[in-house]
Length: 225
Image (tube, rainbow, N blue to C red; front, side, top):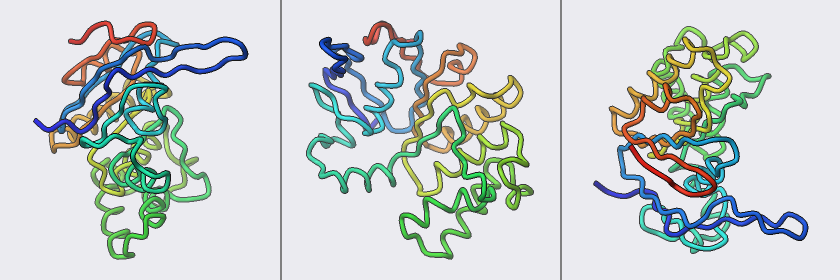
């Protein structure tokens, strides 16, 4: 199976005053196309830093991050941003929806930024709203939606540009058990259709939805199941 993201001996060191603080310590990880991977571990273990590397949001202090076989350090700034915007979808614990835009308008925004045709924008946004089970909520504003519904809109928005990889940072962290389960069922269905999913979670029950669980501690991968 094709490798879509690979981390090779990745170190990330932050300078804090006079001290160097390593967030990642020689991490090696390959994510294959179509996989569903959960990254787990205690707070401060480097999970979010690792997700930033996988998502090409940050550069390593040393080591390499390969996106579909190409070292991301070779990309120019604008080129990397454009590729990242089309290949990788991001979902966060906080839904980050624009409060003055409806559910449909929130989903359509990334497509308009990337200059999709209006026909594509309309057709894709309506299809995605149906995919996440909110076809009757398109004209609702975020404040009129439950937390679980808002996160499902955020999932649809992340998928709007047709990415091949979906990254989620504690996607159920602000949701109750029922709403979190609904979001994970959407993830499960998307993964069964071939979407590569990598998520961070501290919840073993949520991690159980993934095909592979990567365990981190003190900036290192300490095990996989």
